[in-house]
Image (cartoon, rainbow, N blue to C red; front, side):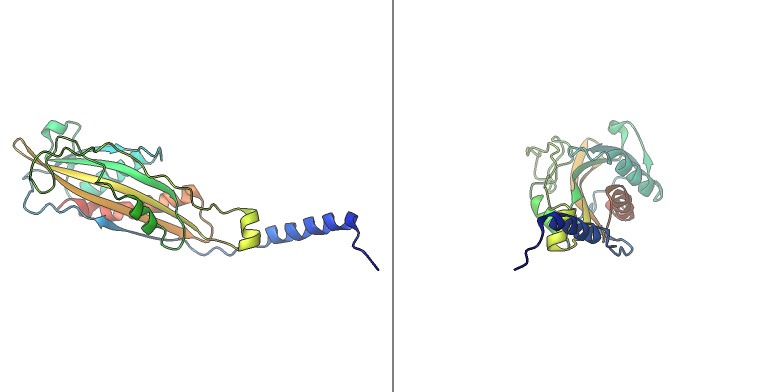
Length: 222
């Protein structure tokens, strides 16, 4: 009876694993999408001017706050708005909060991220009026991020369970105040963007996500 020599088993196993690891994974072009989970509706509460003060909070430490703020400025300037550093003189007050930036589980993992963001919109100032104008908003609006640890792609995982595409999601809370004299009215929105590909690294994903957000941002103001 012949037995498999143990001194040959290890080299054969390593050679098999190396072959599996070197097998190419076809990577098609990335796709992306975006949308409003809740869109701000200004209705008739529109001031006559077009000056905007913008402030962005980034509790998840995504380091995308400045880029998001710049994207919003470009989008609004294209519609004739101007930005101001003085919130007391602005016609519109825009407060942004980055709620989530990270991997999400494909396909359509942004839906799970949205389900996790069930709190009120965590943007705006506590002194603003409630969205329905019923009185002072007393809810805690402290910026707070969402965190999750979806399964990351890795060699051993893909070896036994197969390849899983890369998907990334960016979630943004947006609150808008419209000034008319001393009155400030709250209008709220929640904006998401998704990017996915067979293989998609974080830097490339962020570029796609920011591009998607910039497409939608002009819709936040008339």
